[in-house]
Amino acid sequence: MENVRELFQIMTRRFGFMNKNCCSAGGCDISLIQSHILYEIDRQHKPSMQQVAEALGTDITTFSRQVQSLIKIKLVKKTPDPDDRRVNLLSLTTEGKYVAASIDRQMNEYLNEIFSYMNNFEKETVIHSIKLLNEAMAKSGQCCSTPSG
Amino acid sequence: MENVRELFQIMTRRFGFMNKNCCSAGGCDISLIQSHILYEIDRQHKPSMQQVAEALGTDITTFSRQVQSLIKIKLVKKTPDPDDRRVNLLSLTTEGKYVAASIDRQMNEYLNEIFSYMNNFEKETVIHSIKLLNEAMAKSGQCCSTPSG
DNA sequence: AAAAAAACTTGCAACTTGCAAATAATTTGA
DNA sequence: TCAAATTATTTGCAAGTTGCAAGTTTTTTT
Image (cartoon, rainbow over all chains, first blue to last red; front, top):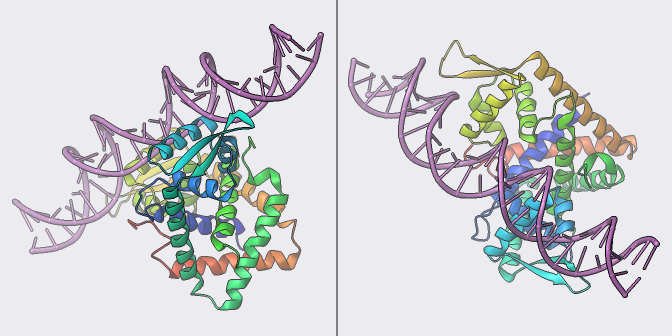
């Protein structure tokens, strides 16, 4: 049987390159980590620092400083949680939303280009498979999350 | 229609956590980048520095130093290419092979655990899909490789 | 051969990392 | 009710990582 890990390793490496290549979409040259942070803030509804850091598997102290840099370039906003003032809620600024949307658009364009080499049945099969994988990975909590979280 | 990028983003993030979690397999606590380097040297046949650095999308100067650190902990060997002595061929030491194999074993164990939540048809569908994806990504060179390479 | 190119290494200055300790707000439990 | 424990986040620090520019060594070109 083929080496399953190898298939995944190559695929995720390529997807990583795609993400890296999209860091300059939206007229803003950010780092890969910053791009991931924008993505995750956009995905969650007013998440706290902890929530985003945990989702990304980033040390909270490192994360704190990454967020500071994103606030400095005006892509991210921090609002104290009125219900618990230890907590800071994160959200994207208008420009942050624009950058995140540009990156997302570019990523989906790349993905469409990749799918253009498949017929429609193959494409649907692949998308269905990724969903299956995500569900299975969610069930199998232990291995696919950070040791800390 | 669902957001395809989101499906990929979450899946590759989880696979990244798996890779990170396996860095201590083989009784050796290495960094994620070092694990990727071991993997890639193992995969290619006596590759040059350039070849591995390019495959991983790492700057060659950074890579040079990462390799030095792997040589220092005796996981990697560097042999001058007899045909072109500018070139250094990379290979794993016996211990490097052991560590790489341990990581690979642990990764495949994790993957098996994930597949245990699927029936056999689903598993085969998923594996087939990843192959399709890799072929399509290889055809669509532009987006899924480094800007430099 | 001299000049250009290729494969790699080193110096440097900027950035990133995570641990330990600090601060600030909230919860717990006498 | 108030001191102690807990939680969310930030800062100091020292170690590690980054990539550019400039270096060495070897090979290719002219």
